[in-house]
Image 1 (cartoon, one colour):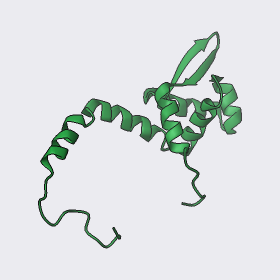
Image 2: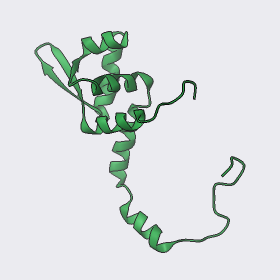
Image 3: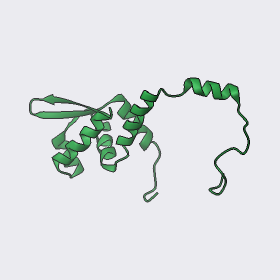
Image 4: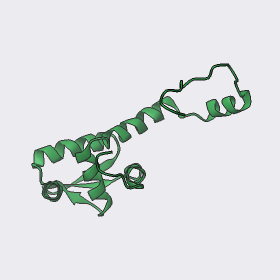
Length: 122
């Protein structure tokens, strides 16, 4: 389809069997909301880079991630908080350190986003 072609059908040609199956199998609205929030959280380049760094290790503290990102700890902490709220990362306190790990959902999303190389500027 070219960009000048309409993106809708010109006549109603419902494949009822297929449409009913797809309706039954569609995402639950709450699940769709949670998954969209997680994907949206990775839509920021800093957060995607943080998640990729976590995918490459078992866990890392904010100090290490700040050094990796070459950003202030408070900025990295903010991005990690967004990722945690979206279910992409988990955190745990160990003494005075806060350690972060990628969740299973986070690993799936990072893998999906990074599966195909993208040319710069596209």
